[in-house]
Amino acid sequence: GAGVSQSPSNKVTEKGKDVELRCDPISGHTALYWYRQSLGQGLEFLIYFQGNSAPDKSGLPSDRFSAERTGGSVSTLTIQRTQQEDSAVYLCASSFGRTQRDTQYFGPGTRLTVL
Amino acid sequence: AQRVTQPEKLLSVFKGAPVELKCNYSYSGSPELFWYVQYSRQRLQLLLRHISRESIKGFTADLNKGETSFHLKKPFAQEEDSAMYYCALRMDSNYQLIWGAGTKLIIKP
Image (cartoon, rainbow over all chains, first blue to last red; front, side):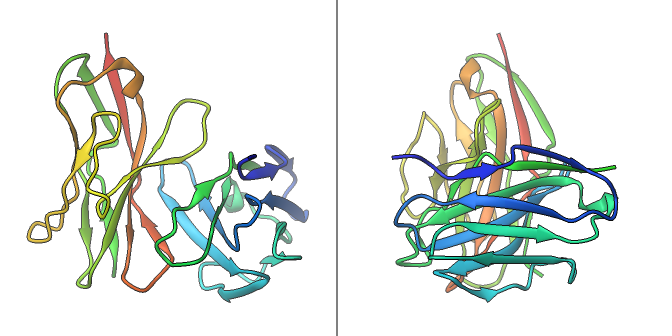
């Protein structure tokens, strides 16, 4: 079946604008993760969903960042009043979620550039 | 704090030579370690995990708790191994992965 998909693949925005990034997980995967990867850095955990609930939002860097998931499927990461330091690749991953050891499958990412 | 360190940003070896990508971690509990790989213009994918104790594409990695290391090794590198390699740690009873900064592996012909 299809893997994790993300849209858009690239987003260029002006400082101060809001952006929405979308993630479609693999069908049947109940767990969904958002990560951020800045240039030359490893992945930074942002938020985790189990179903529609986000038990861990500890990675969100500021209150400008929020995420939701509906129907146990699609998730949207919203960044309000974007800043230049928000420029990064935003990765989404999903897993079966049956156990914490389930393999995470990654999407291709959204490259966000804030001018 | 928990941390994963990949000391080499770039590693370049000739085809057929052995390759070792280093990964060290700091965590006092029972870790689960992973290697992920990202080939050019492809998405990040799992290469291997220590609990599986398997060899994937000729790569192996052994968890050394004494040295807190999980180095990735391959005895004879191939050109198609050129990619970005990331080491990641999952702490016990946790879903969150902590990532190293990655090592870019270049295999020269």
